[in-house]
Amino acid sequence: MIERFLKQTSFTSVEDYNKNLQFIIPEHFNFAYDVMDAWAEEAPEKLALLWTNDQGEEIRATYKQLKEQSDQAAAYLQSLGIGKGDPVMLILKRRYEWWIVMLALCKIGAIVIPATHMLTKHDIVYRNTRASIKAIICVDDPYVTGQIQLAMNESPSVKQYIAITDHGKPIPEGFRDYQSEVVKAPKFERPAFVNNNEDTMIMYFTSGTSGEPKMVAHDYLYAMGHLTTGVFWHNLHEGSLHLTVADTGWGKAVWGKFYGQWFAGATVFVFDHEKFNADTLLRQMEKYKVTSFCAPPTIYRFMIREDLSKYDLSSLQYCCTAGEALNPAVYEKFYEKTGIRMMEGFGQTETTMTLGTFPWMKPKPGSMGIPNAQYDIDLLRADGTPCEDGEKGEIVVRVGDKKPVGLFKGYYRDEEKTREAWHDGIYHTGDMAWRDEDGYYWFEGRIDDVIKSSGYRIGPFEVESALMTHPAVVECAITGVPDDVRGMVVKATVVLGKEWKDKAGDDLIKELQQHVKKETAPYKYPRIIEFVDELPKTISGKIRRVEIRQKDASK
Ligand code: ATP
Ligand code: MG
Image (cartoon, helix red, strand yellow):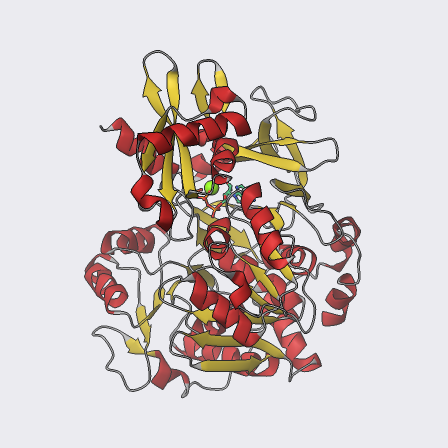
């Protein structure tokens, strides 16, 4: 089996790979058996996972060890009555066991729902009920177990609560002790039947950037869809050591720390840390000689404020970004400091990488790249007709009657939301962009974030990128504020660099306004500028413009 996948990696283009994809999809594709266990057989001693944490602990696991440990975990979960089609929620942060349990659940055909540790009792009850969660496996973090305990009485579907603690620590009330029980598991027997390709394998919540997170259901081929992410976008191969910065409760974790990377036979590097700090992260990359790196733009915005010459990053060869728009100024600064051209990608929890800059392309700073041939992508006007080059429209996937590999099945138990986004054979991303004459796509903004002011439509990204070229600005968000005359006026919420904080005042406001007028069409300049210490963000580090809008509206 693995040989067939390996051959794919010798394809030189995504087009080539996708043309052949239909011929290589096995009937009952299961990532854990067909990729991971196949690697364990073919290259047992190869390093699959290199895990470390803030305390300097380290775990190095080969493909063979991952097979053995995931078999054991699968047998344990089976012994608790968990099996095919059972929804299991994981709240494991970046604990090593997340990778093991993810594979184990895949092996027994259960539906895995990775979630963030920030959930409150209310969120947990909501998820338990909505998805009829059967078991929760969580970290032993007093906040997490505390919230779960509060939710227990109102969660009748949940039969098992399992905590993964540090050895020897007392187990919170109501939980089973994973560590001591898993080692006593019987020998794993692979079920005679595990899955069809269209069965649900994983459900992820969207980031909640624009509103309540939506629950996205993916089938078993979703894993296959990420071959492109790991092999063609991250440019990974055997010997690569790849680090993606993402909480395991965010879809980006399986984009960057799981399926595609292991398709490529690379080593996934995990740094389990409490709070992001650019210096600490860079030191880990230096120490472990990370070769390939991917993070949302917000991480790069903080990295370029560090003196990068302090670190030996000579092993680093390849850098990618996705999740939010990458401001050209950040691209240029990073290139200047490291000599590495960042390769941007675009996609959603609902998809695998949809647009991207591939290894054989020259990136255009500020552009997301070109369509992944896995999807039939187009830009549509509001009336549903296709845009010309240069014209702004919504990014859509033409699905027709055959769902492409990688696209979600729908929002779980929410037909209305599914139909809103996906109807008449077209999936609507809700994101606006335009295409240049070379076929590169340029992000404009989420449809909800586009500002209508005095008859103009203003995409926040362009104005944010203009502001970002001013040395005082670390981060900013552009939003519309209701206005009697103009309908909306443009507002900038700005985080200043440390050395600029005491200059926050009218002069700096004027200077920033003049700066934007010089950098982009003057009608877009922010008439209102507010300085703040921090922007409201999701756990995945995305700016929540909706929160700024709501706050302004309630004033
Ligand atoms: P929610 O749907 O709950 O509001 P979300 O859309 O942020 O949250 P995700 O699925 O994590 O949830 O993110 C996908 C979105 O991220 C895309 O729809 C797009 O708006 C944004 N995005 C991803 N990559 C890029 C990129 N390269 N440039 C600009 N935006 C991007
Ligand atoms: Mg979304």
